[in-house]
Length: 134
Image (cartoon, rainbow, N blue to C red; front, side, top):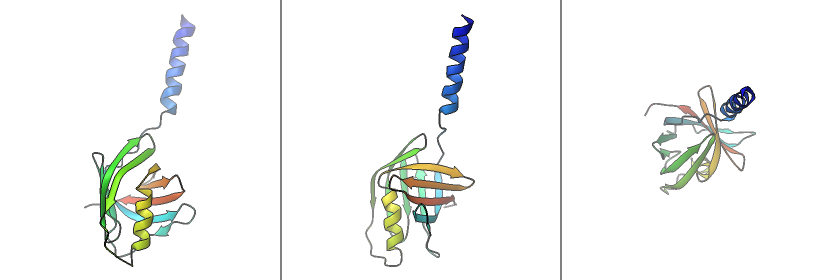
């Protein structure tokens, strides 16, 4: 009987240690960088770029166009759905907007280091964010 109890305790401990705690993305985040994971590009200066996560909804602005959609967290994976944006032509921020929205139109792994939140798409593209006030 002791062996069974020890076995159950051991399995419980292994399960608890292997479970990945979800990262809390709730709130507003300023865009720091985007693009290829190996060489991210700094976000455009003087451009108010942010992403806000609230109760399964994602909204924001990553240049001159605003966007919105849905998200779902499972462990360290975030999946975006139905993300749509306005389509104004903004030459200065076009590359930044396209790169960020590409990550927000699929699944990404999430990683929190200090105050930086990194979303990495399956294609190896990143969006790096830091907390901000709205």
